[in-house]
View (spheres, rainbow, N blue to C red):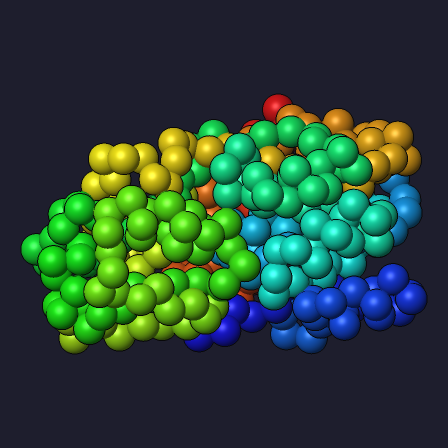
Length: 306
């Protein structure tokens, strides 16, 4: 299913209009309301003012982290606009040109390496908030395949297809250009569409106890919802564990020093992130604003920026 938008009403500027043509969307917060922050939550951030544009790709950790910070910043006096991008390239281009302020889901050093090589000298890296991110290729635990080395020999089992996510994703590039040639996977085709479509297929296959192989990543709520196993990658074609980083446009740290400092201390453990994602996507059915609000009322935001 399509994730409900976490957008707050957009500021109508030429920058947002031009970016909308480059593969992004601007929508209202879930339920069409004003997108208020969780009541009674101590965010512990200095009061401030100004307009901040947070960009994100519709990946679950980016979705929840963006809404988390939207609520925190708006509670502290800032006006926040969030923009969803369908492709990573335009997002990095917008960030490097200064049309966007912050991106909370920069995977380094592998997944977004190509974009950092192109745009990195025009970005600020504010901090790392998770250090155990990993690209994966996964199957349901009932599937009798355990390694990428065995995938080609079992092509017929999977209908000759690996169910992927967005074509522009670093994960897609790693599987297509590294894993597939390294393991001689010639009888399966990596089919790209969207993360939402991949998760829908995964859910349907598991419900019917059918074999399926998907591209995925950790941390992700799917590992809590389903009994999955990652296929072994003995050649480390998908890389070692990565970090998830906060990236900003050049000059953001000077203009919004307090916000940049807070983002620089932001950290979430695998357990905290899994808990937040589970609250949003399972307990609240994908209602991102309501789910994040509920999580904040049970978990201290100040623990994340200590």
